[in-house]
Length: 403
Image 1: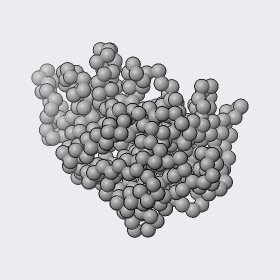
Image 2: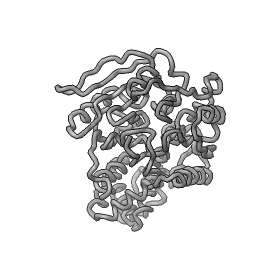
Image 3: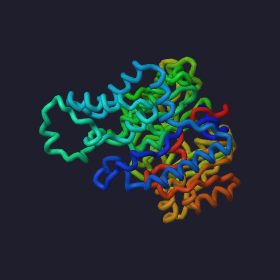
Image 4: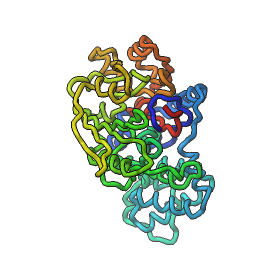
């Protein structure tokens, strides 16, 4: 993946599923939601998103389908996946490991099995163990106790793994509740026949957290990566070394852009996305003096130095254009920008130069994009937006045309 804007040909999505039904008011904070989406409408909105992509020449593949294909390919891999999934779900008691393994292994349809791992498991769903005396946990826990927690953030497929040049990063997630999400990408990019030969530039077991929403492919030689609430500078440096040490990698420059560490600005792509050769959306809250560091391939590894200049100057220099236009979310009006930024007004998915998919609710920003000559494809978002992520967050590009 050498561009943010060249025609998108194949993209990885996850259709919101029953994992959203296992959100409760008491678990919202832990599971990183501010409200509970209405699943029926969220599915309809997501289906519209997928349809618009297909109507514009994009092949849509689903996370759950690719993982199911991996599990169907080899019984040993299926067994390994179940054992790893249960261990990473924090199931420590041998009794429960066996019960959950047998329960999941009994789901013969691999896609339904994958969806169940995403959904979560309640105690009452497990078969009664007639060979074991009831434990104290059984006696004090109601049948509504959840033993494997859901993964409701999975419809934001950009974050757990991302395409980087000709490779991929399998990420170490910021929040414990999202760490298990990366297991699916790990199996796809290790075992799926269409993707298993992809170079891995980052591994989910690395100690430093990084998320895909912070990684932007500006061109075949340059990445921009946000130093954010969810991506550590240590991770950026480790990723840079892994890329620069690969003789086949064309990327030789990484711009590390520091943004405020707040929930509203959780990733670089929530405040800043490329939408044309010389145009970007931007939240006005990040404009002004910024810390940008340039990591460059060097004979002995890499060099790191501050990158001087305004954001416009830095981007124009990297992209080799006379100047860039930063289109402000909400037109720069403080109240409008804050409101539309909360609903991901700056988080656009560019599917071709000058053609973007956006949430329809950000009407002020969308009108401004049209005024700048962009083709704006709107999707409904009353429920999808409750997860605090936009169209770019919901899409993991697998193939774009080369720049």
